[in-house]
Image (cartoon, rainbow, N blue to C red):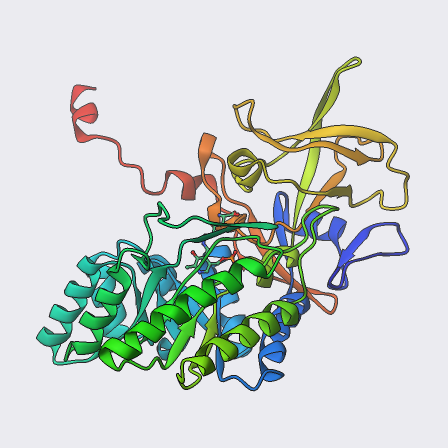
Length: 437
Ligand code: LLP
């Protein structure tokens, strides 16, 4: 996918760059992002909306991969940005991202984070609960401002990959429940507040979703809610936000839909349901994260030791693992891999890829077919662009890898590799220990 191909040397090339040269130049592990492919993904959502006639905003959910370079790229593509913390907000602002296109999410934003966002004059807050609603109303009054808000509601739909469950009273830490009247009460409060500007409602039903039916059930519940809000309080939404969650292909058998399939299905049902309730069509917002960056990222590792247990399994170890990709250990997530310097050799062996952390669960891939590997070979694990770098950590005091963007045969370092000095950079030796010496 993207701009990947096998070059004349039989090496994996991404964005016109030989991955073995990238590994030599920047070291391993290395996150490599195919810039053209990220842009194509951004444009596919925008294009899909253009065909529907809806006004829209596509907000990239930065939690999937948040760096200054990524925020800049998203800005250039004209998307909005979903942030969920002061750190993501800071990253976006440092990259020069226009504040009015930033939406702030989260179920427990701190007062400091809220003030930081207000000072920056972000576009809107996606309010999760009554506590936050009251805090915002008080701050708005204090500052003599009106704060734009969306209300995150829990429609009682949970979607996981290819199924959705309609759960009635859903047990979730997020959002105002639709079923028990909390959502309607929140709409009343925000709509009647002199300090809040209620834009509309938001829902997010899950991640890595392949089918459209979960979204459609959620939209029907949201539009029912909006119908009640119109009848009872005369509230008409300016915005309807249906969240993110659009799936990508990690391994064979994953069957995501193209962007236009999701967008067409969602816009059709929104139009139908709102028209039936005589509610003017609002702007439609979405928040894709994984589907923008997931399959644009590849991680390069250097292969080191191997362990063979005859008739059982062969372990091939790489110089990274759960520190740069927590998803296999945390979710049993599946990935595919290839040996970047042996792309034309037959995948004749089934091996399992182990990380280097002191933990048996630090396995990146169980049972993958590869050509026979030797120490020094470069292993490329594909589709690691979402929730890889963003969930990376320093377990075992391992330094975080570097990130490069590649395009048209050029590579650009966008995150420097951490050094050991970085790893101990916030440590302090206790004064007491010095006195006792
Ligand atoms: N909007 C909201 C409110 C969200 O909570 C999320 C993801 C998104 C948008 C973006 O969802 P996406 O399009 O990326 O599926 N760490 C997990 C995924 C956690 C998703 C959390 N929320 C993983 O690695 O699979």
